[in-house]
Length: 292
Ligand code: BEZ
Ligand code: FE
Image (cartoon, rainbow, N blue to C red; front, side, top):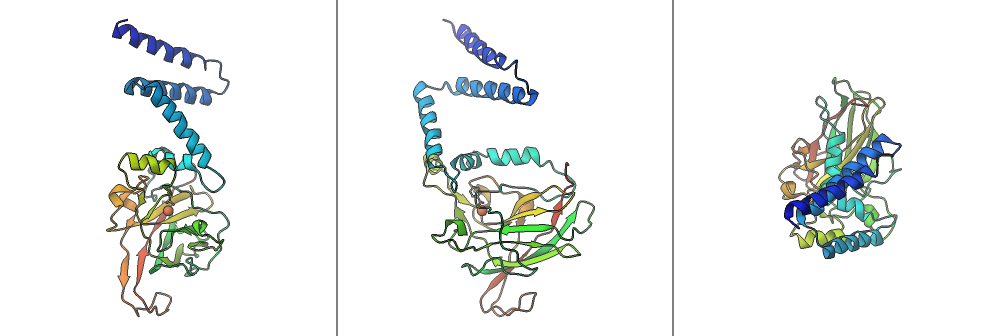
C-alpha cells in the first residue's frame, strides 16, 4: 500500500466516525463530539501512536481514576498541568475593559469558609509572615461594589492548605464583604511557593518530562457581586522564583503584586503593633458585567 493510500484510509476512518454523530439531537453535543474525534484522530496520526502507547495512555487514565476520590481529583490536576484548565478559563473570560484577569481555582477551595470582618485575620493562627492585604472592588465603570463577597484562601508557610492537615482545623481561608465605598482589607500570611500534589500519576508525568511541580507563590480570591461576572483569581508575589514556570500556567502579569516588607514594630493600618517583620500588598479588583 502506498503512503497516499494509507493516508486516505486513515482520513476515511475519521470521516466515518464523525459521520456517526450525524443524528445527535443536541447541536452542541454534535459539534463537541465531531471536533473531539477529529482532534483525537489527528493526534494519533501525527505522532504515529503505537498500540503499546495507546495501552499506556489507557493505563495512565485508569491510574488517575484510581487515585481520585472526594478529596483528590487527579483528572483536574492533569488538566491543570496540561494548561487545559487555563486555556478553558482564557476562552471563557474574554478581556473586558479593565476587568481583573481570571486564573485557575485549584483543588483547595472550600465552600462555607468562616466570615471575617474587614481588617480581620483569615490566617486563624497559621504559620507565616503576617501580611496585610487591602484594595477595593469596583465595576468596569469605576463604581464601588459595596457588599461584594470576597473569598480568600492560601497555604501556610509550610506550603500546606488546611485541607491537607491531619486534623480538621480551618486556617488561611475566610470570606468578607466589601464596605460601602468598595474597600476591603484583611490579614493573612505572605504567600510562599508550594508543590501541587505530585505523589500520583500527574507527579509521575511531571518527573518524566523534567517539569517542576511548584506553583508560584499566590493568594486565591473569588469575588462576586450581583450583576457582575464572578471572578476567580490570585495575586502573585513580585520577584517570586516560580513566576516564569508555574506548574499550572496560572500566572498573568497583571496579577503580580509588590509585597512591601515592613520592619518589626511598624503598626499595621488598623493600629496593631506587630513584633515581627510583616508585609503588605494592594489589590484593586475590577469585575466585568455578568454575561460579558
Ligand atoms: C492551587 O493553586 O491551589 C492549585 C491549582 C492547580 C493545581 C493544584 C493547586
Ligand atoms: Fe493555591
